[in-house]
Image 1 (spheres, rainbow, N blue to C red):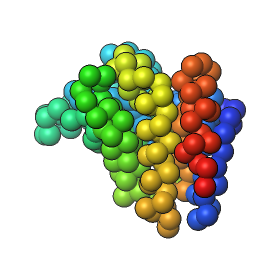
Image 2: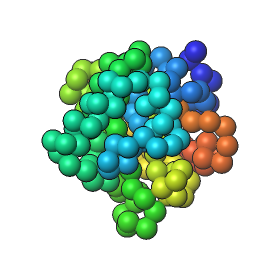
Image 3: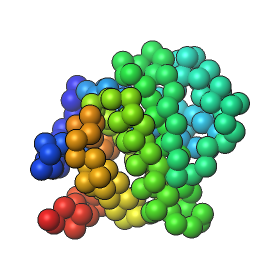
Image 4: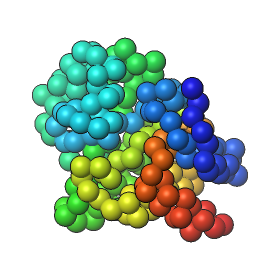
Length: 189
């Protein structure tokens, strides 16, 4: 199931960015991003859905990452095994909580790290969900600007990247509406 493409941009280098409505577990990509917390605990939302579907391998790998590195600060990302999911890996992007300060900058940083991790592994396609917009309470406009900016900056900095396709996977609702509103501002050029 490839979802419904709502918006799509093809960059000069042929890389594509699409906003889709889909369940991230069914995205036709090589890796997915998880909206993670610093402890890589998968208590609710998309994180719980990914952890439940991936099974014990992903959970054990996340525990190992935390035992070696400690908590992952907001604005950063790490990769785990995908377990029973059909992906090459799961990238855990730790977005900021509202009130930390510099929320948009930290969110862009977490996503850029996620994209860089996919590039390092030579993965060609990635899908990421709403990060920081749920229980972390970062406003939809801040999230939308950060999502679009992170993709635009990554492709501008890496025109020859192996990562050829990035997808923002959302559900219908206010966040998607805000992304649609911010899209022309981000991609006016």
